[in-house]
Amino acid sequence: MIALAISFLAGAVTFTFVGDNSNNKKVDTNKVKIVDAAARKIVPALQSKTYSGDKLEFDPNRITVLNFWASWCGPCIEETPLLVEISNDFPDVQFIGLTNDDTESKALAFAKKYKIDYQIGNGDEYLSKLQPIQPIYGLPTTLLIDREGRIAAKVIGGITDKEFRTALSKLSAE
Image 1 (tube, one colour):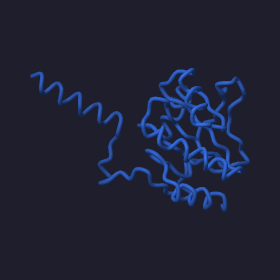
Image 2 (image 1 turned 30 degrees about the vertical axis):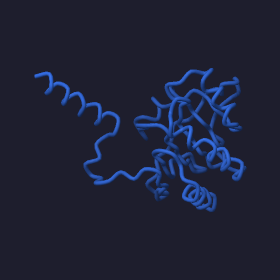
Image 3 (image 1 turned 90 degrees about the vertical axis):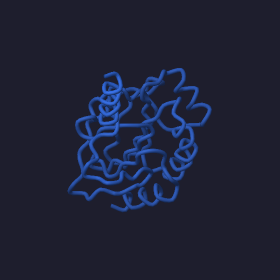
Image 4 (image 1 turned 90 degrees about the horizontal axis):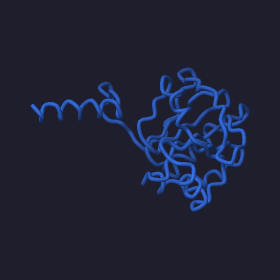
């Protein structure tokens, strides 16, 4: 009986965090696929504050890289130096980092250690607004948002250099 209960709970947790991928035989992680413009979903407005108290919102005239991360997340630690480098190489693109299930002190220490020079803030509240449109099931997850405030691409797991730069270049050319 206990084994049956554990099995049921494991299945429920897997479905909750991974979702129903029955239509997808394989979930591609770390892949950046630009969504056809007609199929893009509008993201909710981001009206928040950075950890330093500044206004945090999407710039409607720019492409936005919205990265969800946490200081305790191993893949987040691995991808952050690359994300910082790419943010410096694409100055016309807005980069925002939103933490999930993290403390302000740990997030700020992480940002200092990895020299994050783009805006960061707590993303817990925004994740609940985003959930009906684009669920985020794990960290890191990065969304590319076009100039019309629509999700143009999603990366599950750490970004890869060449693919991410290519996607940003394609999106910038739109």
